[in-house]
Image (cartoon, rainbow, N blue to C red; front, side):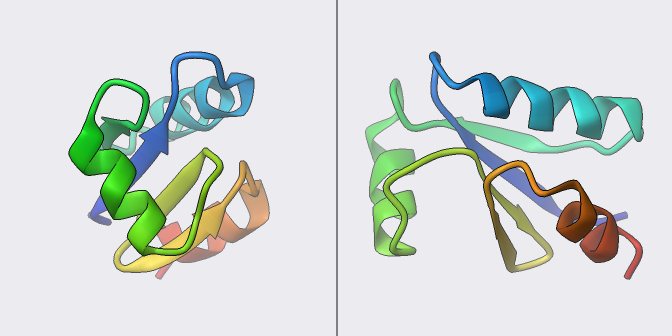
Length: 76
């Protein structure tokens, strides 16, 4: 089972789509809301990102809701 973290915000429609997609596929994930969690925001910025969603799947970053890349990483 992949280790998945999703960085989100309260107002991001693509974040909702990404989370729904993972739920549909039965993938457990950890959500880190950068709007309400200062540490999560610092982590995201340290990775060089300012926008969400950013998914981290087994250490690989996916910027945005990129189904193909998500599927490729989950298939490993």
